[in-house]
Image (cartoon, rainbow over all chains, first blue to last red):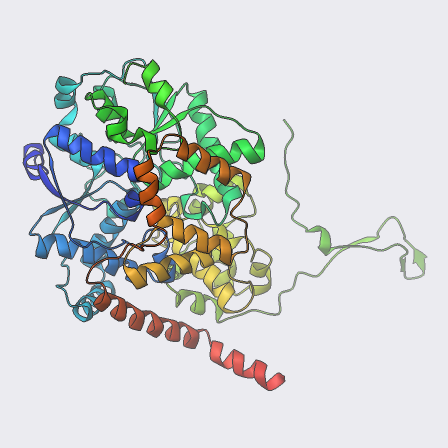
Length: 313
Length: 253
């Protein structure tokens, strides 16, 4: 697809916030919507959406997860007649992509999804009916770096940022056929879409080697000690790289970093000061939105004084 | 920098004799250390097939032991004993007793998919780790891990209502695993979260404790899923011969 086609196609998308964005990740929901409004992009929330299965249902049965994700895509395609679903949460985005891949390539998955859809009383989702994109694709393809530069009111100049993408946005490679597809496409080993957007908003991106490291999000509660170790490594590496902020694009990573930053302080005595802020919050403030408008008060990581000092509030 | 060597002989397999006499000659203190025999006689030939029958384990037969999975593994980096390549080898050769030595850590796979990304043979090692952890639980080698308990609470709520409310899931999980909700770091997190939140939002969060979020029109999907899940469970019990195991145990009592 040509870049100009995507720009046109992504102007109005079916919006799939997912469960986390109604709970612990509400700041991401608020800032994504505020950003869309500010940029003149339309979000139509998927009617009566359900959970995609997150990191848990696949451990009970992977095909059940495929069905859950397919139901969301079926609603968007067959009821709402939309051809793009935008999911800001890495978990939702990953699961919809994986369902798309499995439904295209695996007959057994197709059979289970068809059977469950028929019993549930809705149309079976067919591979190819919708294109699932991430919030990063959405902003990058519609507005892009040039568009952002024109609209920036409060430059992020002087803010040193480590861009953290996590696991689900890039792995495994085969469910993201549009990535690693030559110049301009996203990379699965060194993702750069968030870097590109924040750079356009004036930020100084630091050289951060753990962009796609794991925060232990799947076991954030069931194996907290492992998660604390993994997160502490990410936080300390970001600080060593000179970052003042870790920009996030996933509610599970975001909450995991916030939670284990405190846990490391309380249980291991390791204190880190790096702020954890969603990329949508950073872009929103760069476009002149007030911190509360992008839900900065809903973060656990308190960055009010920091953004004030940097001239964003 | 010191070189860290891993001993190939485990301490419990070294037998040191206090006094030893060989053909009438006292050799105590010289030839007193013996290595326990390493002959394996208790192969479990069904193990690979059983694990391959559980979700995620399907492609274990493709493994050619390159070790890319272990090399890429997030958990291996913080615990050298966590070794997907080795476990796949043990499963495929049927060395059950050797696998059981690591039974309490296999569930710790964080599903980061680095192994699946690196694997040149599409084994999906992440899935194999989950299938192996489930096999250990189903066979009674390990109790349900905290991860499995969390997965079950979570999935049950999704199947019932179509959605998750994270506060409720967390409270149920802590209760079921017998952990106190009043942990210093959790309290600190809540304190920091509440610092900037307006009253209206707190009310909304409070209400979420009583009003479960639901997907409208979910009942059809719920019934279809429940039927499918119980079918799958019955299938796994059959493949692993669990009903026979239970019967044999009853006869013994």
